[in-house]
Length: 303
Image (cartoon, rainbow, N blue to C red; front, top):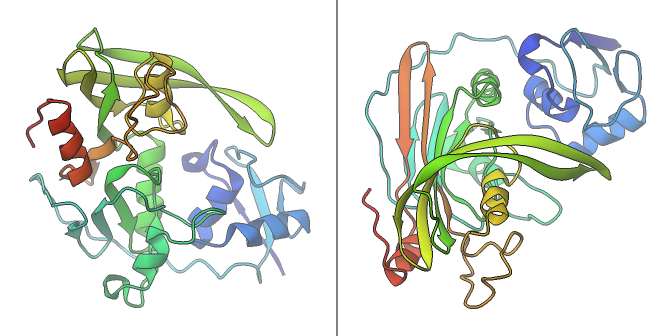
C-alpha cells in the first residue's frame, strides 16, 4: 500500500534523506538510496536523489512496508535547567528522560559512514543508558572535534531539537587554538564558502562572530559563535584568513607546515537553547590534549 505525507514549513530546504530520518527514525542511508532508485519513494510523483531539498507542501509518497509506522506522539515534559552544568572530558554532562548531553572525545564519529566503523550512536544504542530505547542524532560534530554533543532518546524530542538547530535557535560556542597572531581582537566573518554535492558546485553564505581570548606572536586562542551551520565552517573561515587551526590536516595554511599537532584544536565548549520557556545551558571542559597545547603555546584560558 502506498502512503504519503505533506512537508510542512518546519522542514523547508531540508534534504529528503534527512527528512525521512526525522519522520521514521535513524534508518540506513542504503535503504533510502535503494528505495529512491526503485521508485518506492517519490517526491511530487517524481524520482529524486536523496540530496534533493524539499519545499513546503511537497508530497512524499512511499510504500508503507519500507518504514515502520510513526509512533503516536506523546506529550514530552521538560524540566528547567537554569544553571550551567559542567563535566570533565569523556563524562556525561546531563542525562534526562528526553535527551543525553555528553562531552564527546575527539577522534570518534557521531554516526557511521564509509570510513567510520565506530560511532557514538552505535555505542550508545548498546549501552545501559539506552536500554530498550533508540538513540537519535540531532546535530553534527566533526569526528576530530571534541565537546558538547546531544543525543535524543525519543523521536519527538529528536524532531524538536532538530528543528531548533535548523532554525538557529540553538546557540553554540566553540574554542579554537590556531596558528599565528590574529590582529583584530573581535569581529565578524561573512564568507562565501564553496562545496561540491555530487559534482555540483555550491556556494553558501557563512557567518561567525569571534573574540580573541588570548594570543601571542605565534598562536591565538579564540572563541567562535557560528550563526550559520555550514560544513567545516569554522575550519574553512580560519584557513581563509591564514590562521588555520592546529591539527587541521584538511585546511592548513602553507605558512604553518612544521610541527603540526596531530589533534584538531577545535572544541564545542557550550550549547544554549530554550524549550517552553525553560533555559538549557551546557558546557564541556577542555580535553587534556587541548590544555597541554595551551600550556606549550603559553596561552591562558579559565573555565
